[in-house]
Length: 631
Image 1 (cartoon, rainbow, N blue to C red):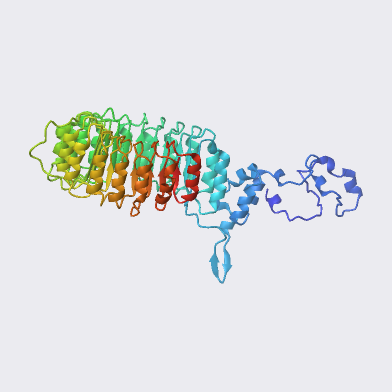
Image 2: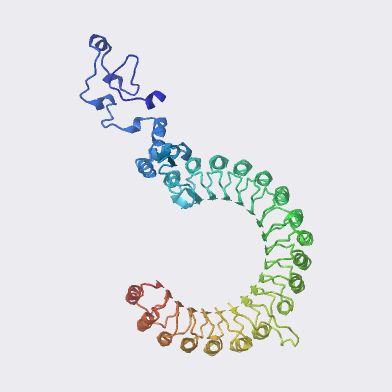
């Protein structure tokens, strides 16, 4: 190899030299070499030195070792990229040249006694590439490796849903992209430990690793990343059935900067791995555990050692009981926890919820979903204990009733700003309004969504309890009508900014007109999607009173061309988004109205407006060139 690389190109033949790549039938007979004078050989056809089949000279006859040496000596990223386009063979060879082995990265130019680097840019790793499904192949990975290596460096790579990517493609990434910081592998069944080992050898700057449905990856690959990538700060493992406790323990030992950990549906990860990780990390801030075979021990350890955790999400922990959640809160070690989400955990009861409220002293955001053992008593006790709570979300907590809601909202010491109830089937309408209650001075946003028992009396009482609301969402409350909403609107002391009345099918124009008159001076977003009794009178009132309205949705309502005309006549409006989806009574006659509205519109939804012809739609697309039109 050194002889071939250093060959100077002399034409003289010397004794002992040979052309091992020549066809022997093309060489002169041996007796002619001795009988003729020693002089330059005359070759009429220089290509005849190659095989009969190869009529044109080609560098392809060189072995990969030679091509490798040639490619690493090419100067300039553009030259290397062009060379990589010659053939797949060249691409794969070039993709295995490490950046550190490129001669242009080693040579320094001396100008005015100053040292200047060659034409390579700094590999800061700011480029992002994503390959999904059939687009993800080894060849594409090799192309990414070559194309990004000298153009700022590959920083983020995501490969998802491919059974064609193998270790070969990632070997190219590892060798050519040492700047890689974020790697995401989802459902790539042919990727195993070897890939992570190669990545860990070359990409020491790796900060984030996301593994999902990678069944061939085991503790070996994860440990290699942990031991060789000291900057790793985020680790996500999902549905990796062969990763065990040892993998997490390696991360605990070797990753002092680990700040975020998410583990889901990994059957071999148990208390040993979780407790080691939690007790070892000093900077862990975000933790998410879902569908794991862990017990009360893990939550107790978290309660003792999770001093730096700020965001915690626990989902479907079937083996954790009331004792585990009680210990987590009662240990009072979660001194920095600000956000807690618990979903489908039977261990959350009234007793454990109250302990969490007392133990997590700076908790601001709480979400409970499908926690079927939490009742009114636990909810009220928790909100009283969590004195810094600002946001509370309850979904499918069916033991919560209207009494728990009133107890929560009437807490005088509460700092609650946002309260959300979704699909809580235990809520029934009140028989009569309570006499004694205290107004909430802090609540600004209220969502009551798809709670089928919620009625007019509840709505009227909550209006009096929460007079300072800015945002209101009553989606899917088919038991409320104009009467309940009238009382609510009149009780609000400040102007509403956002109102969502989607699928409130019993509301009519009368209450929308009242809404426009009372809160039109502040209203910015109004959603009346599915309110089938809403018609043109509502649009006329909106056009007259809602000066600052930016987003209006009247899909599947009874409005006609007349209503659209009223809306467009309000020249003082600044409407930006209008949705008329499913309004079959809006026709071609509204074209002029749309063009007037188009002066400010950036979004127009006409899907399901069957009375508007395709030619009108095409004209609108041309005329309203600044507006995105859905049809």
